[in-house]
Length: 386
Image (cartoon, rainbow, N blue to C red):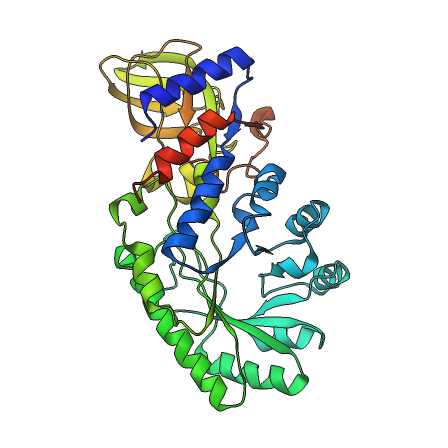
């Protein structure tokens, strides 16, 4: 939880700097701390999942910290190239690619692609380097999602032989478990995926196809649900299953960028209607809170304030006048006054860039926190408690 003291320090700084709300507050120290945790706990090379947060400030901060980036669309690819990231440090992950998109990606100098079927393989030129993507036993499908990528070991084995015969380089085997897998606390989705991937790698070696890297994907829970605080051995369980003589890559997105941004908003009103307490903010579920209110609403939204007083239940609502602009149905807050600043931490994943222009909404401005406050956020989420 973000402490009342730190929330107060952020509010004081924002008032002194006359920060307009709503705004995203960027804490780059959390990115450094998150990368350090992955290095220490997991020991794999890092490919940042750009789709989780493609803001230029985030990407600039990560560029010297990670080995590479992965993208799923040409827009994010153009952002990375515009920041000076070399094409050979970028992998294009979407295996279902339109011909015109492929032409654009190849023209940019990117040659690394993910393949999970014959269509994707046949589209690529001989200069391409490919990763074959497995659908693991725990695919992480939720009530909101449909797992669309990855294929069986038999299909991938056939693709590998066809790729070899065409002279294409197979640089990795990969899988992705998502965040909804059962037994996540024990790391079982990853352990089963690693086992299956290594079996496939051995099978390919017997066919004369050597694959140097296994890619265990991402899907690591972020800081919002405090998973890593409750399960400090999570990464160690995965690391213990990784073979020492094989290059290992991972693809974190949410894990790194979720704690790197917080939404700053102001209270518009705190009132009681028909016996129900309703707290209105100037930030919206439609503008920068996409993950918190849509992708993973079950984790809840933390609302930190410097206010004291006896907390009582409240629904927290945005400014859009419809019944869906709901930030939290069951919050517990102290009495609030009009104009009070509130901080919604862990809103850096699937936030900036996920804004619907409802009733004139626009994306919140991103403002970098000063070093002391940035370090305060890093210590809150990573400081000695993992």
